[in-house]
Image (tube, rainbow, N blue to C red; front, side, top):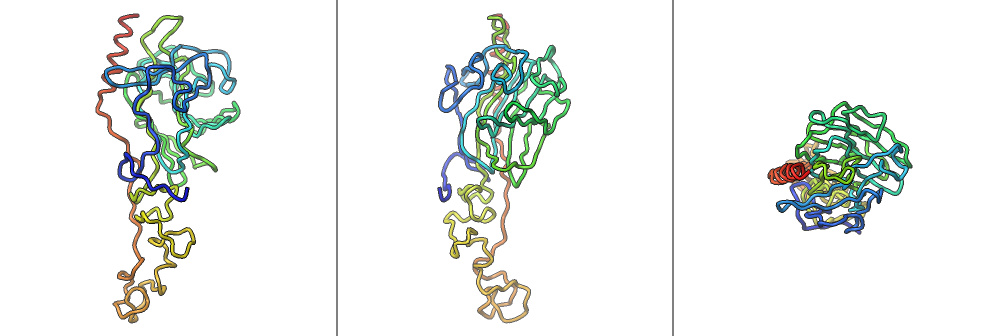
Length: 329
């Protein structure tokens, strides 16, 4: 496409590319582009009090490793959209004390993941799929054909029985992953895109030994945004002038730089440093300060890292749902 001129649900500095407002109460593998990495532990959509969640069904672990196609690869991902500069946000809630994560840039044999092994407080007997990671602990990892590289990490686990957003932002050459006050970052790799986004759960299902143990990890409200720094509804990935609003994408000299921010199209070459009789565009009798000429404007910058605030209703629904399961168990 030449450029994306989009009118959709968005916040200042961003345009929504893809989202899931509600998961169906059914198996999720194969639904609307979602696919799982291990078909023996299916992911299911749950609805409670008007909120829907994606969650793994069974508590499963094994003696294998990430990349072998077994329990260590219990992920659910969606190809979504090829967003290079943008942000992926998903809400999470975990009352199971094992391992879970958020995956991004997933291709056939490669992905990145924010991985948590155990809660900082409130859990015990954690199973972690990665030997290199402390328990409790968290890490930003890269998986390539089953080989795992730990990019960054700490001894911080997840917040037990708490609603917390995970945000993955790719902007200006840096990928930043945030969970509460935990932040990991890395330089943006070549050919990186915020596609192949999704969820991960290891020994995190609702059922253990055929019995509902009343605990799991829940993912909901996933949203993928394109960055749109100048808020002109032309996303930064396609904008020929990211810092100045130019919805028409005019480019008079066809050099790939929009007229709105192309100094070579300003006319006359007046930089504003002369004291002669120019009018700011080099052909009149102005004051020569260069501020009144056509086509000269300073880039205006605005923030793209915006997260949709939550009302807390989902947290209440999850807590009530977990309590109800425990009473039944």
